[in-house]
Length: 574
Image 1 (cartoon, rainbow, N blue to C red):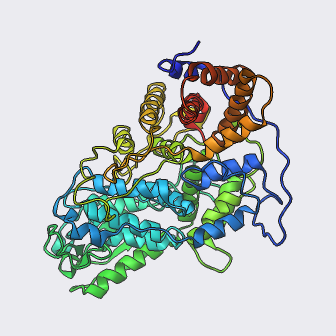
Image 2 (image 1 turned 120 degrees about the vertical axis):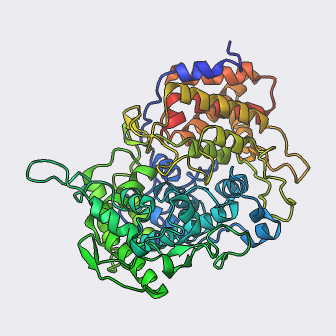
């Protein structure tokens, strides 16, 4: 008989889930349009789509997706969403404290991950925050972080060029990568930090890429550089001339506080000999004006966007962060073609790119091998469970319900404490390479961007999810000061009741049937329809029916979710 205190080890030791047979797809509704999608939507494909396109689906959402994926995308793009109310935060004094842990911004972002109906926008903003990575640093505070997040969310379906321009001008990035008050005047050597990362991480990558994502090679077979050191030198100089009004952060006094951009400071701009960046020579300007500073930045961003490698690099980033770590060259080629031209001659249209990523034939289909997916970030994995269990985040610091610094320390908010402990707190990446280390394989899949999952980290994440979910299965606390919220689970409880009503036989038989049906439902939703092996399924049913017999339905379902999320594949793979 299983013990709830020890079932983590059992779940982690169990075998992989296997692909379930394809399910019959519902017929195409009248008037539905499709862009690179199958002619109809099947449940398992819908489940995968929701994993790819949201921060986590609620129970029943995948089953309700019976139109085209393109129609769903259009509806999501049109949804209103809640930006962080920065003026209220400033009025409460949140900008008078640097808040180095970024707790306030973390909480505001986390609340939107969990609560927003505009889930595609939240997911794309999450992806953008990994590609154009920025974190609090130096004089930057929680207000700057919230302004940055608001801009990413606002431009999630805009143009990638505008986001590169935002990175040049925003004071949050200016602090993070040392481009605020960066001085190239009168022969000074400016910091190259921002210029290097703008090229290496935010747009082009180190090596030139063919249209299928493979490295371009010279006649000797060596990879071709996407840019050279002289390009970094030139770009660092050309992007000087931005900063804060007084050279240091002064709360409430920044001239462009409303949108978080820095002021133009022509006195810091490069005034030396001509420089060449990506093949274009910029003439000498003895006394640069504010217009010259802005024009140089615009021209540099235009040059970066015009490089063929940029479309391939950014497109591959979207594919690997939303769908699969092992895309084919043809998949990358199709998406990068859309990045270069959305069909109306526009480059960098993110709405078109996201649609191409999610509706590509390679992303879709009723059954996919585990090796097709991607190792899931801990932050996304946790929020997926929170949303599936209908986590109710009661408020955020911009709400009138919460005074002053009620959230600032993070006390009373276990999900954020857990994310912080795992190094993936919202809006607070651990480095410019974002939260996720390189070259760790799970089921043959590369983890996203830096060494995310190892056996100890998988077990640590499972244990933390277990401890957290235990604390979140109680009824909602009456106090609005309880910023944590609780698992609601009402949708699963209703499904449990329906399954019980449909069951027959003795009470024991009805309970076994009900629990078996719920195990299949929860596993199907969380694992894209991949069936558990007969042995693992029986362990899950026995565990819930016998070891959780004395628990209420809410707690039974919470433990069931925990059990299924403890399985190695479901813990780490989309």
